[in-house]
Image (tube, rainbow, N blue to C red):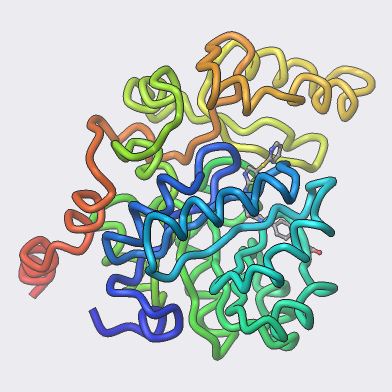
Length: 311
Ligand code: TUI
């Protein structure tokens, strides 16, 4: 596909693998980059030493371009930001905050910068700061989310900025990818479907949780406290949703959440784990290799059938 995102990042298909904390390690990212997309390591709450290790592992597996997603709520964000510059990471994604203070450092290291945004105002502020692209992430996405849906957020940002826009939230197949391009996006970011990549080292119980999820199993905790997180229904989610309406809700939710994503991804703990996933989880039933996933999404025959049905 001829796309501004392919040119900007030096990739074959305009698809970015979402930076999912604990899930998106060097093994998954290398497989996606090798298959022609942009693989992304998620720094999450990890220290800089872990991030550096993952960059080294990825570089030992592929010489294709890749990205790192820095989560701006991380206590290690300062040191991680510096490692990304020192390591000359080709593409830097940011999530859950405003990366203003690091833009100059990363630009001087030669990185392309693409913040994940959940509003038009932030997309415009980011463009004014000189970033190279934005990821418009709708609230269908998993994990930490904003309020607006992909269907409204994407075209609103597309008509408000002049830099390339990557659409995220609800994208998992050729139909949803094509819809993102119709909305004006230059590329797509896919998260949840890559949890089911064969190269993804996430615990099988996490993958099974996605495979078994029904549409109504997708829940959002933290709406009341102002930190909405989308995940799959489980015992901890039930406790969190009740706690939201009790006194000290912020502290209780923070305590319940601590270590719960690791418990899900690493230990597959169905009781204590937070199984963050996008709404599309209910549509995903099988595991495939990263290459199969990308080739299925960008299947020219499938695109043609959809477009012909509209003619
Ligand atoms: O970052 C994400 N999704 C994530 S990060 C994550 S790790 C985590 N672990 C435990 C609890 C909470 C998170 C799981 N999922 N997505 C990117 C994203 N960024 N979506 C929305 C935003 C966002 C929100 C507010 C970006 C900027 C912002 O405000 C900045 C400002 O200054 O206005």
